[in-house]
Image (cartoon, rainbow, N blue to C red):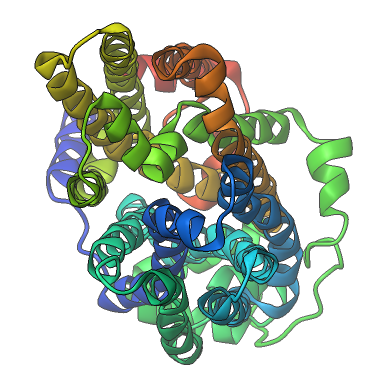
Length: 499
């Protein structure tokens, strides 16, 4: 009878999702502005490359390098960001990212030639690395377990919003003169960087980082602000103390914490001598970041004008409008995903998303192959190619896109979180750079249809990896994640309970 009553209470709590704390929401929104800037830099380049190629007289190889260098530099930035955020805090790491973005945007907007443009793009890339690491970590550490999925998905939603704004900027500024249009497209990203640098310092610091520094009174004060009740704040505070190796009954305002708690020796614990749970966590984080881009989203986002052109769309205005449609679709469905993450769970959405991507990529590969080998325009193949692109973006956006950042930012133990997340982001950027810098060469070598069949094959591998290596984390506190990954039996129970 008691068990039945407990079961009813649990079911009731699931039906009434926890209310999002307004201050925690504001922190996550402001912290995620950095992701809008990154998304804008990615999206705007897809259309800007058309004008840059014509104005600066560069070839396809130089276009590929320009597109991909952002991610090579982001790899360096993400690795530096992990250590930086452990030293100066999550907030000030976002300020550093904003300043780097501002410098890069000014250089790209001024760029009189290709070398200066590349320099600005490289500097912006460092900012991208900082942004991709710090935004989801800050959001995850501010959030409660019941609302973490929604708040930690905000950076990915903001990236999509930024990409959409980049596409709109292409369409608006593309009507200006050739020399002015693309420079305004790239330079205007400096404006939100200034706004963010001032806005984020008004937000509270991550309480988990403060505990790592021994500043317990400050951490507890912030937890009262970002929790809905005093009991919730005290429960979260005790969990964080235990995770940091501090006595949960400690009443000191400031304490001296061991160097290991401050983040020293992290690389040894992550890479050289990881415990079995940490090893599984690291494999899960690296795998999900790798497959996010190995399945072809960057090819669609960055080269969608070329894909539509190959499918038969000829007008420059129509190419840019079709691309804007991709941005709108991506943003809308990531918004849908933010409401589903804490209800349906990470795992179910991830497997559904990847399954849909497999179907869409196979269809796109087939249609583009038919168009390429047809002697006359095939209207049905053109229509299905465009539909397949949109379907692919829809399925990516409801699962793999946002869940990559939610999942990887929540699974690492407290003292390993910043640098563990930075390793995942580095893999993400390396895979992204490989795709964006080689896609044109790949489709010339194996045809554009063949390239998307290749991405479909990668999506099949991704589904298998997710099924066997990624347990459910919905509703778990950040401090419980090692336990989730500690035993294969736990993983199997989680897997069987969700699928």
